[in-house]
Amino acid sequence: MLKGPASVLFGAVEPGGILNVVTRQPLSDPFYSVSFEAGNRNLYQPSFDLSGPLDEDENVLYRLIASYRSSDSFQEFADSQITTIAPSLSLSFGDRTDLNLYYEYIDYSASPPEDYSVLFDDGSRPSRDFYLGYPDFLLEI
Image (tube, rainbow, N blue to C red; front, side, top):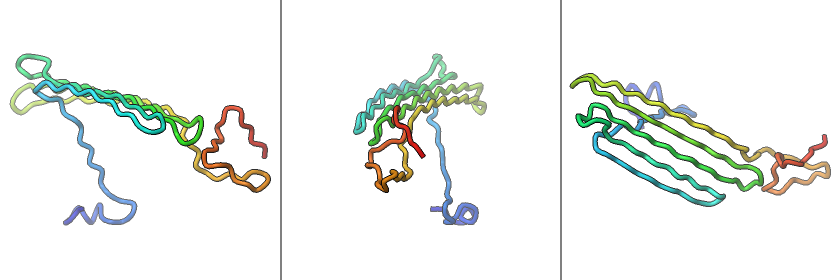
């Protein structure tokens, strides 16, 4: 919730708000994390997060975060794959001088679910899992 002068600029007028994006910084202590998530609709997401110093004086720090996510939908032939790679490098040139380099690569490939309504020529509606993107479906108008 915002109060004070900021509430005038970013108040409760819908849609409105603030998005605070905080990037993960390279760490001076070695850090290694590997995870795997699985769920409904053939969801699986392996990921890893690696960080630490690249030199003994800890003047050069790195962080590498990568993940892959794949899932199906309740509709046939609707699925998505997302690959994310986010490396970062932090160089320290002194007590008050740092250079931080960040990069983010995202590859999104999907056949998203269709969410609009269709009526067949007899006036009936298709089933909930009907997908207009069926490979051999021909819609005659």
